[in-house]
Image 1 (cartoon, helix red, strand yellow):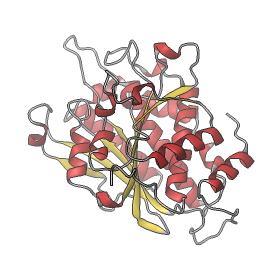
Image 2 (image 1 turned 90 degrees about the vertical axis):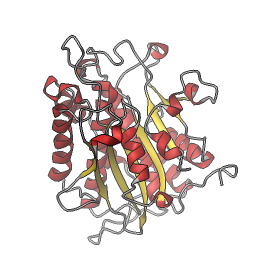
Image 3 (image 1 turned 30 degrees about the horizontal axis):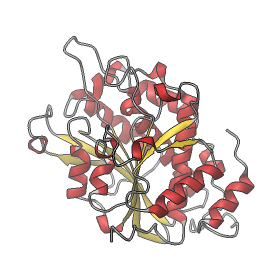
Image 4 (image 1 turned 45 degrees about the horizontal axis):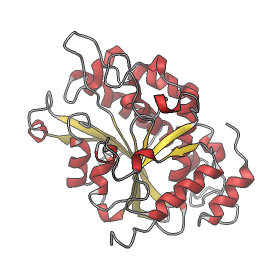
Length: 343
């Protein structure tokens, strides 16, 4: 989707972005006002290639603690190593180990969160976390593999592509002001254990975490939008920070301009999706969150959730939206503020 550079530059400046256009420099300390070239590096072709591997039968449905889940974390780590995106744990260790007992008998064994990051140049102590869960529900009793292409292979590969886009910008001399953490969480399907473990054992102080952008199922279209597929559900964006909601809405209008549907953000939503994905463990610590979601569909939690059913053009657009939003959050002058009733 072609984006008008002048429009997004104006909107980013209005929102407290980077101001005047700055020339590329070798010191990697400046940020361009136009992130469009880097968003353009997130492509449907690359997303498709990644997802056809990640949601293949070889990964055995990625059940927490299983051999398939171990293949999944190795795949994710390899992408960060290949792109020279570092781990905050150590030079070679991208895994936050979680003991089997933590899962209260619901896991096949010990498991791991996968963590990579790009350090900011102006306020490196402040971090934005972009998350998605890496696990799924494994193999059915009938022996069918639950590939979990949408849930949440779509979120997993989107984060990898978003990370590569930020890394490309940094290589070209444009360093984000704040640090960006790419957090792939285990054990979401059995009770949000991976995100709970991270928030109980944070790699970066929670008080320095400016927001969490959580991606859980963004590759499909639900029944409510069969005729209007250019949409995405946003949940939680205004619960803790109206400013985060406003930034998100403005960036969408200035970039991909899809329909942001807040149906499931209602506090009386009977589905209670706000409480059902990993962002909730960050929200419990008063960290502003956005949950990106395409809604459920006929293949939800079934072996038929396969990569051939993903709408890759939509996945590209949605991943780019999250990239643009992240770009603004890490580069604006001040971190988004909490609502007064939260303080």
